[in-house]
Length: 492
Image (cartoon, rainbow, N blue to C red; front, side):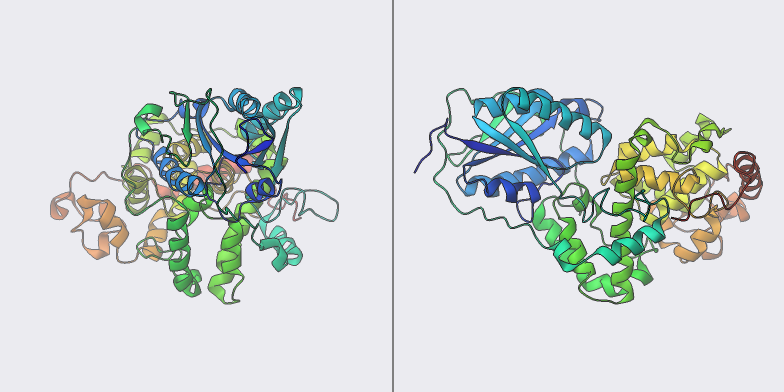
């Protein structure tokens, strides 16, 4: 039967879950027994703060093209909207006579506020917002201490996570987009600059320039669930050596899955199933990284004030940072004179990607050698990372700055030279991203200031902007003044 445009139906609102398969909200929507229409909103409030050539917008746009093609091939309608979700979702639900809008949970405070506004508006019209677990295996209140409190340190959290986990927790949500007789389209639903209708008869997918953006070449980072599955399959072959190779940025040792997990072109359950498929050291190390992701989401859910720039350890809100904007700009542009830090920062600017080991090294250098406020670095990563996720970014920065969840309160300071010698021993990563050091002899590649500029022939590369030994002592003194006790972190 071909349903009337005004027969009961539901909407499935896609956000950071841009795939058809293994999808919590979509699985529930399809079980409702009425026609399901898809919707994605290009949020004008978020897009307004982004540069015209933002890589993430291109990634989302490409992933959506694949998703919408799969969706409409089954005979269903998909809506692409541009504007404010709290206005558009209730309006679309009323227009399409949808009694329920299905979507997946999002723990970010701004998303929580948005969803509360949408739910309230829908309720006033006799409709509802139904949300489901999808981004994590365990949500914020599912892994707690014996006292019912959130964990503050990762290792005991991981232990509790693994003790609770069973294979049921990573089972796929069933999704079957079997072909249907497509819905007729009501006359009011036309393609405009704010509403593009995609349906089996064609419709129209918006160009990026209609949204105020231009396409960016993502290089090898293809978007969409098909590319995500290819990445997962490729990593499965490398995973047994993951624990041995993941810290070396010149090697293909990392999973390379983070953008797909961030935008949901890959489900977290698929990644966990792979990690649990064997019990070797590489698989255990990979699972640990996935649990770190959940740990930081749990922290954010319990501490939404972190989105306002607060330190997880509140006493460090009083910490001062003598570093200045000139130091910060050198760091941003990869001109500090420390090759591994500079190579990492230039990789970020050029590709939107930064290796996890180098995120820690560069963050430690900014906060503890240049003594610049960690919030400045957090914002810089937020602007440029293709896989930017607020919970992970904030958690990582606060961990490196020793203001967050860390069993060592403040005395961990990465030495950029020894880190370089250990994790890029031949200087391959450095030479790739710092062409001015391409011909630097191996024995000087980690500290080129140890030879004269004239003999090196690379006067364009800057000398060190800070002495790491002196700055380290100054940082320790600053932190000690705020937190003199080393054992003052709750071990739970």
